[in-house]
Length: 355
Image 1 (cartoon, rainbow, N blue to C red):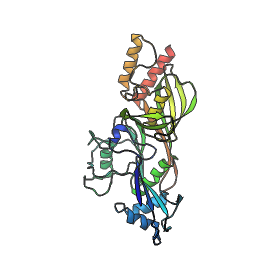
Image 2 (spheres, rainbow, N blue to C red):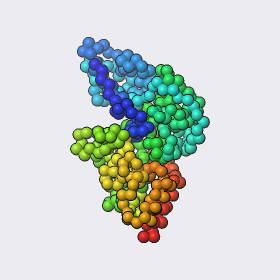
Image 3 (tube, rainbow, N blue to C red):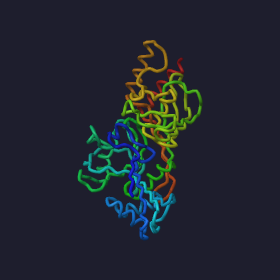
Image 4 (tube, rainbow, N blue to C red):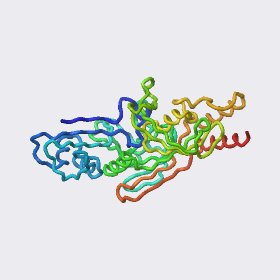
């Protein structure tokens, strides 16, 4: 018996609605139950026989990375499957059937070796080709940088190097794997929540506490499929946890550092909105209008000027820490807030000081 489940619905443009950042995108969950008359066979051979479109090499890499459990225990490739064994395997989802053309788009490469890249993605750059975005994406740029191309009939996703993604209008650090082994190893760290990620956000309002933790399941908003919302009952959506710390207060806005324990779609944006402090100029969650402040025309002009300087939500993926897939070295990277967001922070700092 075989059951296949997907972490996320994939019927929408993932760059438009976002994707699970912590999980390295969506995951495919497979469950097999060995027949009562099953003869003993290595688990890697058993899975290969039941997953014809996945190579034995990739399955062996997945086993090594800890993605395969038999009877809820991690096993090695030479484990012998017995009758009634329950085999579970989780694999990072890999898009297929999409043409990827290399495009000479400049990349801000923070780190690169034979296994991976760490990039500083600018705001406004779509990560993956999709509906309305068939060129000019990060994947097109990576195809050029790595010397890879793919037609729409490719049997495998050779551009499946993206370990995770951040929203189009979020700036900051992003990991890219160069091979299957690295992708699986890095994606497992996202799956296990061992990746260290901190974001900086400018939010509306004066957050009451200096530090805090937001816990609330996140799922797609049934009234607007382009949005996500918190379901506090704990029965709907996916478990999500965001830790925050106030960096600086400006009276009508607050600069915060957010650390993701999980990383659901739009997690920081949704959690902050639920807390009553949507991100500054977040048009999807109501932050693109004056939510705090005065009614004076001078203040409105000040806000309009800030929106012009930062025509996107105020969120930057500042730090990223993980274990290297080959050397097992602990790596840590940090990228300062970009100029568009920093200019608005400086304006708020000056405005607050003058009040």
